[in-house]
Image (cartoon, rainbow, N blue to C red; front, side, top):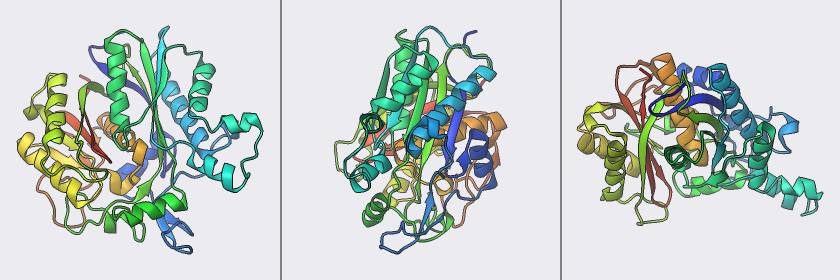
Length: 386
């Protein structure tokens, strides 16, 4: 049971659409945003906010918080899914957790509700090592286990790290999980104050990546799990390669010169052994901000020769911060299985290669780009299974 490339052998997902990968796909395919209106989460004390927030429907046995429950549910679904599709764990299974801000609600409750007084056991649930260790113990995995953080590019960074682990023979398989459940009123307020978060209207009205009139992104949450292996008979998609660079330019802004963004894309293609002409789709970071739209449109037009189609699922899933890249890779991988591209509907004039709604997939590769706050660039190349 072997494949030439690292495959995504199983998928699990918890998103604003609900619990489960099928719920994610059905939500994407509907073309309707996951966000709903939440009272009291807006930038003002009594303001409402449109948020793609994960509902509190997890198993209490998986932890005290939505964060721990969603993390373990997504990983468990991915492992169950992979086994159902024929994967058997090797003797050295590693775990990579892509995360930026862990247990935001847990720490908030610890200080504001519990007044820093908890049982030691409950206090330990706030540590980033705890859910990872609980997963390793649940399945008896003994490979390396660690957290990876590269802001919004964390998911791509962890995929590239997993491939390095497999390439060097350090592990036989990798369980990947990416988690971000950070939509507290305080965090929502600060992204609005930064001028990039838009929560005062339906997401399709505000978030229009590569279209006229876009104001920014809706806020979202997600926990996404993958099983990554070379030993699967039926992976959803292959991860051919990837690359990472850093702008070293500004705390929030993308370097307008695009030097390191372009290098990241060129290096990702080279590491994957493919040419720009092989890319059929650019699954963009696409948060709907002017600077990111300008940079990624230029990558499409100049680096990729203007031929791939482009889309971003952020109007649908929301911007899931540390889990953004992972939920967007999951959307592409599920799309390959369904032979459809889960693009959101367009609502205004935009880039000529922008897809409009759910679209039949044509042959070719997908380039997934992520531009993390602070200058973190990461790109991976996904290929359909022959």
